[in-house]
Length: 625
Image 1 (cartoon, rainbow, N blue to C red):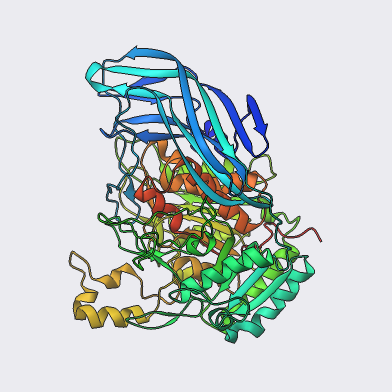
Image 2 (tube, rainbow, N blue to C red; image 1 turned 90 degrees about the vertical axis):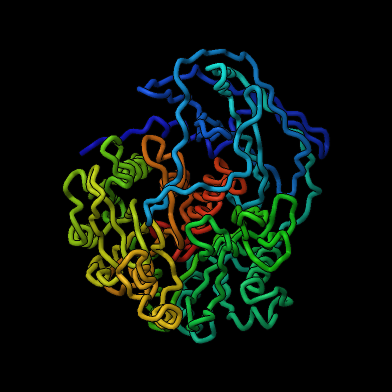
């Protein structure tokens, strides 16, 4: 077995905390925080044509306007919600000059995991133009532990490159000063309902056993119907469409009921040219050139921005949500204030299946041997004969490293060790029972796969129709999936009808460019939902992409794009986030702390499309009693 121990793992531990404060002054509501940071000497790794910079304290990389790759260090601070940050300054000192004989390595372009093509994202705040080490920062509002906070992420760029002079300027020290004004104290809402379940009235009776179970476990729970939401039964109905009315309802539940968890129970109901939904869905209209829209349930979880304003995801007011094109851009907060998950059920029988699975999991998983097993399925995600790194295998190994010390054992099905050769060994391994599975590779709504080492052929995992072969019974894992479209939960046989009406027989064409039939959007259940909704086993929950996933090849794969987000889920769990929705949301927050979503189109998309198909209030590993 190839043992991957990425050098960046230790450095990445910095992203979740603010570090020690060297000084603190507070005069009433006015305050100043200071922190001194020190950086190690640069490590310059010389190749035949360029030089790669390593800085032990780096938490990510930044790309200059010219495309050079430089280290970045992020420090994260939390303040009471609605704190006003009046000033942030960073003073760099002890600047070292280093003359180099070769240029600095250029940043790799993100790769769409489905197409294998590189993309050129639209950047808002690429580093450049500064004559010395510099910094930036961003603010957001989100949930942390027991309540709402204001996040401040300060991004330090202690290395500056002057290509014309073959010169590196690197700081050994930095002093951060933050000036702020605390908000006036306000009473927190009395918690009436920790969990709100939203479903159509047709599913209400089937969900009642879940409501009773949650209440028995000490989680105050309220079941409401979509018609109640839209008709203003509990709060005045606001919004321009069904999805916005649902979001306003969730905001009111947050403000007045003290709600933390929201479970949406309902998927696509029908419709050909115009989709209809049992529970409303929102599409992000971010267009990165790969696709013009995709589903995002993060829309329902992001309630407030850093200033305490409602985060409506339509800042330019043109009725197009989460828009980001070459001509228009909505400014979004995106940090989750609520923990939102969805069961995209389309029938009462599916609801009953999921209710039974959740109750059984939470009452039987605790203390079981099977829960302490991790399964990693992967290969060489970006094969290149000159690239020694097997990115998917690196990702799954890094994920398991977060579980070591917690009593977990691992079973790695990799193309490089000969254990991942097709669907059968994956089905057999999961059928033994396990607590977590991490797939890292490529996908579409029906299929997940990866490559053998340095070979661009595919090895397939189980497809959506083969999920029925899983026989793990009640020993069901939480499944994390790197790849494209694996939880695109709008799939339907009606998409085939729409395709034929639009394209005729070209819809089935096998000539390039292939007909849309081969997008596999016509299947009854997408890959992730097919795994989660199995009756004889499968998964208790699946977290994956609703659209195109993205990664970067090579050594830095674990600190950038999709591989980073996959790894961060397991870091959040190790950090003590044991309710599934909080683990999922913390994963997103960790990512955005390091990669500001409004600075890079692909980073923005990666967060928006990372969807939880499962119960956000699920107690990971079950209840002790």
